[in-house]
Image (cartoon, rainbow, N blue to C red):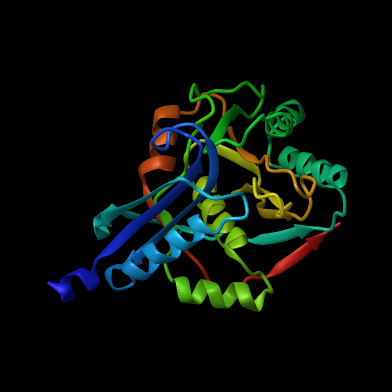
Length: 267
């Protein structure tokens, strides 16, 4: 039986919050997801528990860890997005770079401005993403503060991915998780581009992701100390929203990575 478990893969998801009722409402503290082998399952659960209990956003009073079996026939694959970084030093420069990137992916300037404004005007961080029409900027989902939460994803070879990130001098959970999520989102049917910046107060980096342009890392998209962050998915007009949302929330994706990540700098 132990040998059988060791050959299985599992989706492990963690969500931590503070001040709600049985995990509903309150302040989002932390979230994470991995797809791991049975042999690594216990260690991953313990690692996520520690992360939830020691997060810089505060002490969680609700922690949910969910484990689901992932059968081989459930898995689809997508490529890792190529990575480039903008040389910006201020929030204004960063948001100008984000606007320009979005326009180059075929998001209209009006919709791009709507997306930047939608995140910057959030009163509290969302758990998921807003879906915006890529031409009009109109919000398409009716999920309010919850948004569309992208789940069930990881890299196909975690050890190789860690080596390639380290070789490119990219460290920490933020960039690892953002690259994986952005790659899944870019592969989704009907997605034009994604805009995101973190809700962690000490992490000011964000990105624009798309199949057309890759993962465009922007070092400054908010002021340090700001606990508000979020993400917007820009969607093709007329896209099949139920199909898109099902893919983002339910389709198991493993991202295929190479031995090397090349980071180019854009001015």
